[in-house]
Amino acid sequence: MTGRYLLRRLLAAVGVLWAAFTVSFVVLYLLPGDPVATMASGGLDGEPLPPEQLDALRARYGLDQPVVVQYGHRLVAALTGDFGTSIQNGQDVRSAIIEALPPTLQISAAGLLVAVVFGGTTALVATYTRAPWLRQLLMALPSLAVSLPVFWVGLVLVQVFAFGFHLLPSVGANGAAALVLPAVTLGLPTGALVAQVLAKSLAQALGEPYVTTARAKGVGRAGIHLRHALRNAALPALTVLGYIVGNLIAGSVVVETVFTRPGLGRLTVAAVGVQDIPVVQGVVVFAAAVFVLVNLAVDLIYPLLDPRIGAAS
Image (tube, rainbow, N blue to C red; front, side):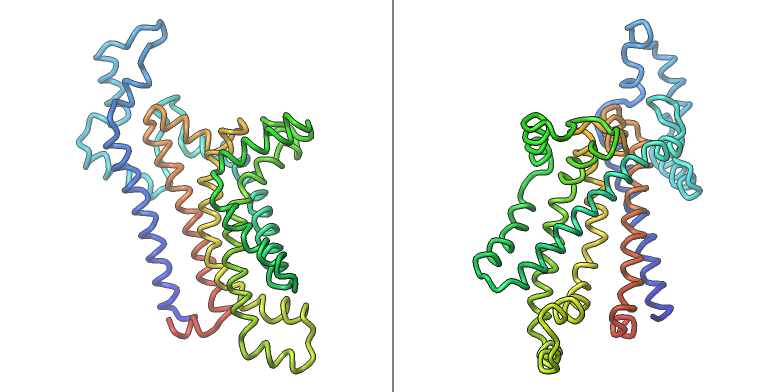
């Protein structure tokens, strides 16, 4: 691995974070409506706040300044990890994200486990079996799973396993049982992506000359599959790992809403509803940072699995 290779990846990571911050700021700024007026509508007595109090709130959150000045102040503050306070409830954005993070990490980790097990098993069995009907069936499953909307899968699972057979809870975040349905809902589409990529890579790897050589040396089918082909076929699957992690975090918005679970998803939905710019920006940049770190780790692992990549870069 060369220093130039590492520098290029680091610069790309910084560029993605800056783009995420800027795009989220522009999109939120262009949304119609006044976040302060939305927050203060109704007031404590059911009456709108007077204009002077609204102006005071806008000045407090810096929303009375030109948009370029707001962008500059927020960008400089974000470089130190300060995303300000929530317009909705005055809570520090960093604290709000830290509080909402554990349930989301829990469901994301469980979803990733489901994705890896489902995707890896499907790809391995589909490329190992000698039964054409089973191979075709397993190869068709990923396309079907990817095409299903996440919220629809969640509603079907709730209807069958919670309301139909009364095996698992439909809502809440208490206990491991409450994690099963959200994890399966989140993990099936991402697992299907893993299965598609890994199955194609395995099929290609099994036709390589080194596999023929291994067979000539008497290595069994299972040994060729797991020790020789899987290692080379894992590179493309590793490539989609960053996308999968980003997809899990994005999917948590839907899953946490369907299953009434706390987390970053519900925090984001509530913030978007009232145009709580600091909270939405904090969550977007955090999600982008996770995405960037995972992809950076993948980029650094590449040369370890295939030294030709680092040398070529």
